[in-house]
Image (cartoon, rainbow, N blue to C red; front, side, top):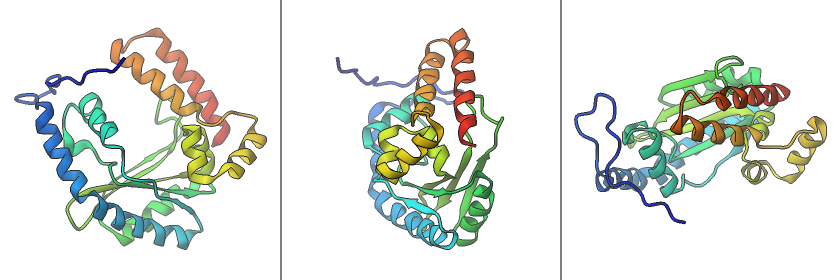
Length: 219
């Protein structure tokens, strides 16, 4: 059955009053109005960097509106300023140890407001990679993901990876690792759902361990 969206959000920590759904939609509409320009700017930067380093650039469409709305409500406490990936792209590279260099490259070309380099051991799930937040000329933030093609295979989802890099690359990594693509995303979603209902659920630790064991094969 269809799930009805709440008209009020759970009260955010330290927030005076929770925003109503119409308020959030007005703010989200404003982001989507500027998003095509934001996307063009971050795509231009990522294309330059990708060409210089011999990476593979993937430029997906803007984030689906309903997904963005759901993310703001469920994971960002209604704070639209924390939604940074409406305009996004990905630079796929050969080796994880190149992530730092690629991020330095990006920062030389544009206004990087924040970046994160996730190393082995940083996250309980075992996921590693890089994310760069770029402030574009219209004031909006766009997100450039930097990761090895193997890690992106592991992260998935599988159909997204095949859309990004093609069936041939998928099949070669599958043949080499003998592991299914996209299990990282499946673990992430299962853990996220459990944490919503009970942050101390014993199954969370088990799933995190399985996720770490899986990701280790792609470092």
